[in-house]
Image (cartoon, rainbow, N blue to C red; front, side):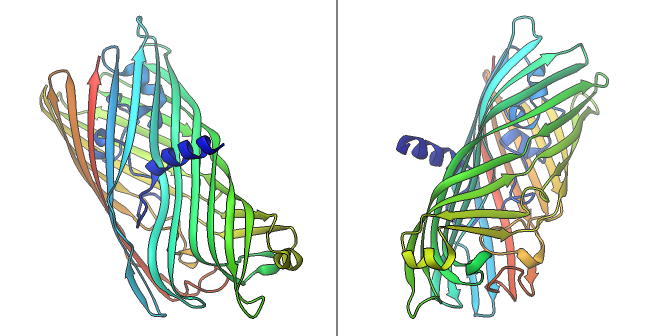
Length: 427
């Protein structure tokens, strides 16, 4: 069990850096790997990189040659600011964090089948602040919610135009919360505490996709990705205020329930000429049925006073009330020669997060992303690089819907910079 937890945490660390983070559509990234991110995350109509295992497994049989191997490092740098009337005006701690992605794809000798396996970090959330709390003074607010995926996949060429494929793999989830927390439901609703919570587990995950060659210049793509339901087991320590003259301590066994959303995506790639290509992907994310709330179940309190007050099992429901979103990704490629490719991209999506539940533990406030990328052939290999810049408007919270009102009358602003480097070797 100890080895399992170490491996799981290492895989999940790909998904978030340990300081201030701001992601993209909610907390899902606008593309993975240098090639896709350089053209705005568009990938459904392409078959030129290893991230198609994540974005459209039906494309694997359409890769050039016999297959490919790819390794990428995507590095996130953020600028996140939180203010309120306590008064706080703080920037989240910032430390660049490299997130690796790996992929291998191989086609059969007759070109009708392809298989592959990849490891990706498609989503996450988190923050690390130090600011004034209403009941405990200066405190650290730290959160990590990480999602990593290992995806074996298979693809089949149905005919000269249609290919299909799917993945069936493992999702690794890890949650880590530290700081002031108001109990959100049950007998202890509104009771303040300082908590330290960790949870880790795995769950099945997968997708199905297809590509259809409309004509020699235009390729269509479609992918459905399943919801990932994680029940992360761990423990929580808490100093609980307001139920005795001084804070009381208790440890608990914990289970944190986090659902990462299913999605449905449509897209195309069109070659205007031999040197110019455009692409567009539209992706729907089912946030309403996944981030409606985060559930927390606490059992076996070590302090008998807590058990007497709230019982041996304490159910907490952290309200999120996120809305569904639709991402629009646009991409352009210029191929001046057989040894060079330039890329541009733009992404727009609304924020799934209502003002009433916005808090510094999770973000989901970025709306716009611009990107640029370049690939250069060196021998058999391609060296790939891209940069993404994401931003959104300053968000304001009036009366918070969270019990305790800790984040009422606050503002939140975020920007994010992605620096992506990769090496792809076709064979």
